[in-house]
Image (cartoon, rainbow, N blue to C red; front, side, top):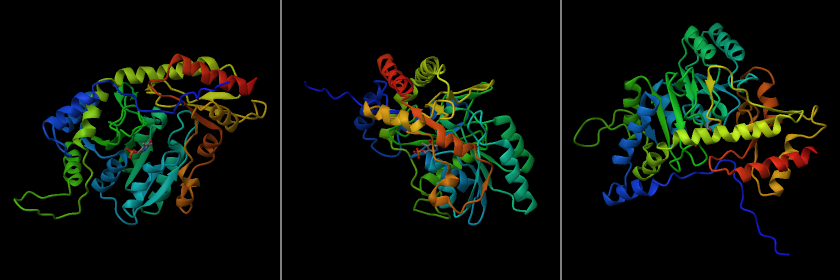
Length: 379
Ligand SMILES: *Cc1c(COP(=O)(O)O)cnc(C)c1O
C-alpha cells in the first residue's frame, strides 16, 4: 500500500491575506527597494490608527526592545527586571547594554509577571539604593499580564514599564490595545506571529519623543547636516520597504486573524476540557487575548501519569508540531548567574505546558485530527 505523507501541521505558520504581492509589486515598480518608502510609511500609519499610539516600524521585535532600553538610558551595571517565562529575545537586549537581567516569576492565572515577586524585587533594590532602570513584562501567548497591579508597582517605585507585546497584537486590557500601556511597548512581525512581515517589529509609545528618538537611532543616529555627522552611536534597525508591504496586507486582516485564533482556542477548550488533568491559560475579566497560541497544562498526577511529552510525541508521529511552553530564563544556562525573584510557578508551567497548533489557517479537519490524536493518548 502506498502511504501518502500527510502535510505537516505547524504550530503557527505565516498566513497570507492575498494582497501582499500588490504592495511588494508597488515597491519594486517605484524602485523603493530600500528601508524607506511608501510601504513603511503606510504600515506605520496603519499601526498607529489601529493602536492609537505612536509607532516606529523596525527590523525586529528584538531591535525594538533594544532601542527601548537605549532610550531609557540603560547602561553597564544597571538592573533591569524581566519576566522569566518568555522567549530569550525579551532578555537578550538587557545584556546588549551591559546591564544585569533580574528575572521574575509568573503568577498562575495569566502565566505572566507575578506582582508579588515583582514587588519583592523592587523592594530589594530600593533597600540597596539601586533603582532598576526598567521592568519588562510579557503578554504570553497574547494574554494580558496583571496590568493594573504591575503598573501600580512600577509607578510606586518610579520604574518605567516596557511591554513585550510581541505575541499580543490585537489583545486588549479594559478595551485598550496591549503595547500601549507602558512607557514603551514592542511588537514582533516574525513569521510565527499573528501577523508577519517575514521578519520585523515595532516600537510603540504614547510619547512622540520616544518614537522620534527610535527612528533616529534606527537609522545610524545621523545628525542634521549635509555630510554624515554623528554625535552618538546608532543602529541599522529599519524595516525593509518590501517587508513593510507584506505587513500592510497583513494588517488589513488582523481582526479576522484574532477571531480565528480565538476560535481555535474555543475548539480545543470544548474538546479537551472534559479530560481530568488538562487545563488552559485563563482569560480574566477585563482581559481579551488574541489567543496567539493555545497552550494546555497537563498534570500527570491527575491524568493517570500521562504527561505533556506523551502528547507531543504522539502528535509528532502524525507530523503535527506542538511545543513545550517557553523555558524560563532563570533556568537557561546562559542566565544561570542572574538573580531571580519568585517561586516555582514558571518552572511548573514549563514542566506541564504544551502549545498546540494554533495557526489562523488551521482547518476544522486539522483541529479534529489534533483533538483525536490527543484523545488517543488519554483513552
Ligand atoms: C517573538 C518574540 C520576540 C522577538 O521578536 P523578533 O521579531 O523575533 O525579534 C520577543 N518577545 C517575545 C515574547 C516573542 O515571542
